[in-house]
Image (tube, rainbow, N blue to C red):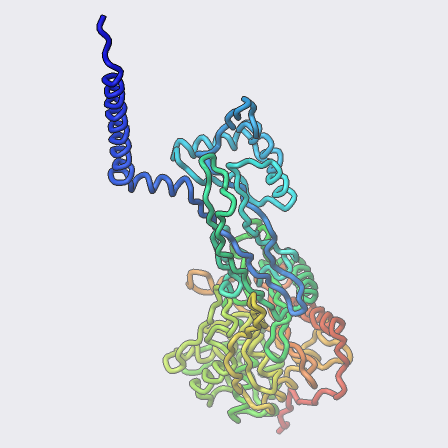
Length: 595
């Protein structure tokens, strides 16, 4: 057999190698073209999805504190346990055939033991998410993990588990000032200061990104963080200790009177709020345990027709306009009629010989109507506005009402009379306390202050911008009005009203409550109240206490023991010294000359 020369065989092999090399290069070129041109966009998106991970970072919402720094609301560190469902896989054997890491079933058992969840439920949720989206990269498995649980999960070292800081809101004082502090939901502030001052309290979210390997493990050195920014601190003007005690007293008397609700406001003469108590009220840690109408602050949000405690402002206005003097003598009938309008006093009586001061002390509707016969209603309503009525307070409380003051030029004759004693108009309890503040402050009405400041995370203290005070009446008129109101405390016929050694000015009220549909007055509902100032010789506090629909005592006298105890509490709490000057002697009655 003939044998091919060696040179021919070498040439053939070289040709075959060249052909194979060309074919391999051609394959690479086609594959490269497919990757870089044909499927470039899809592959890039897939690579980014598998490699780049972005996580939201939650900042810490700022605290709410009282005037002494007592924490009423704060955020505590809690963590969300999240997983990347597409990477929830059993570990593969290594080169030696060993399994390194936890199998999925074992991992879920250990996670459930830490979080308190059902491992079968965790598994079912992961499966459901993968059925929805096989490439799902996020599922919240459990939230609210504390520091101990956080460390326990970390020690498991599960590559497809991620722990994300998500601070949660807690209220260490519980229901103390819960009506003011308010509460938050999962993603927003819902009530109270939490809502009205969210701009100060809210944190700004940050973001963390990192690259991830094929098995879902973060690649070291790839983490980039844009940090979250924590919220600021809101400081209230209230005294949490006083708030607690006022709440206790308000709840006690609400129960004793079997009232629908009770509200008490303690305000300093400079307009700062020291306490606002409600019963029933809300615990922000569990707001759903309270009825919806009890989750806010009626002091700001429940305007009503205040009744006789309003007479104080009409009386002071008439004094200021020189329409009356305290010793003016009037003959006051039980029923008063004028221009087709008709009003009467609460109890039937013959013609009484009262002075102007006696009309206020005896809370006579007919007497107030007689005093105001020559009073211009535009002047009267202008005065009401200077006392702060008809507009929301400067607090800007969430859901706050402005109350109702009608145009005095268009009101009917009946409302012209009833507006002298708190019907045909409305105000919130906070507005009423603010009106009495003007009398306690030498006639100057100052804006209500519940918020002392917002301190930013950088330490800058920002105080709220408040309007300037406005003179409602002269200092002389304010003092004279308070001196008349002293006789309500000493001469009204209730032994529980006075406190020995202290000069106290107050006015009682029994107001009819309107039906919610506006169809008239509800005979089953009355609002009983007391509003006052003390000490008269050097005013420090305004106290307003009121009870909706009491059952055991439906007259204003039912609110007097509560007012007495509130004043006594303040005297003890702040070591207020007794008055050093005697009360003024003001005639309340007069005797007609005998023929």
